[in-house]
Length: 342
Ligand code: AQP
Image 1 (spheres, rainbow, N blue to C red):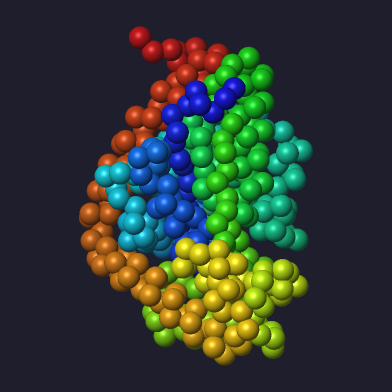
Image 2 (spheres, rainbow, N blue to C red):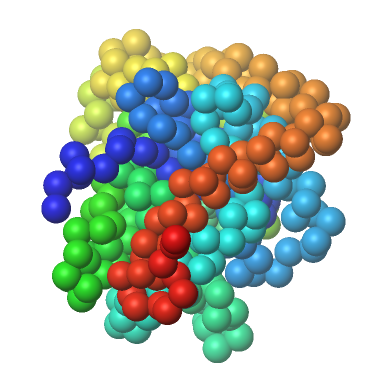
């Protein structure tokens, strides 16, 4: 099957489980905005069903869902141009996920490194949902026949699983029905690292707030976190190969590059030879100039709860018009009596 049979369509999502952070922004959200336009139909989702694979306080989940929606819009997603909604409101995701639970193999799921990382030593006590989550993610994508999925590098393995599920479904039923989705991973910061440990990714679940820049941080907090970010005593190199053994330095250069829409090479041409004492204030100023307008607009939108809920409801309605016929066709292919329309 070739991708060209399918309408170019982008799908991606973010969990409303914690603070939106710079990793979510540079790895995902900024790239969602870049893909919004005439070339693709764009569908972006607050994946609340994924969030509950670990315990979520209901009131906080509601608040975070609205906050992520506000973040999407504040960052530049236009609800008239892109479909914005929360996953639980389009039942086709979970309906298709069940079919995919029956396609995915246990061996495939057991290889998922994110489950191993998140469940840690306590895997017996992890929820079944946390284990099955990548099959729901495949359904999120394929219930729209999405052809492109912009994500951070940490989601690469889940997208490979999505491709395997589509290929196995098509093969088992002898159809060319699901597209083999292209991951869109790239840019200068596909994996933003923890500010205190360059070997770990920046994450909303890290207990220390100093490890990440939140989209809601004010200028002082951003400057303080960058000032205290772990670095090394050497000056910045003039070429990227000089960063290969310096994960913290590489991370800050990549963040600078992604925020300024430059490559790391271009940034080093400008800042090579500088000490961190000089580079960190430059980075803080850049981060504040890019993030402050977004956080200000997010705060304003958070005051308009009814408007956010209206946008989400309208988005879910639009999403359902794409998802429902694809689910119906899937049921027909699989052999469910009563699925055929008319
Ligand atoms: N550090 C990161 N660098 C680049 N991209 C990142 N993403 C997340 N962290 C980074 C991307 O953001 C999108 C949404 O992620 P998610 O909310 O689905 O969950 P996550 O990957 O589990 O993100 P967190 O915030 O880091 O949460 P926990 O604490 O659960 O690990 C995805 O496209 C992801 O790649």
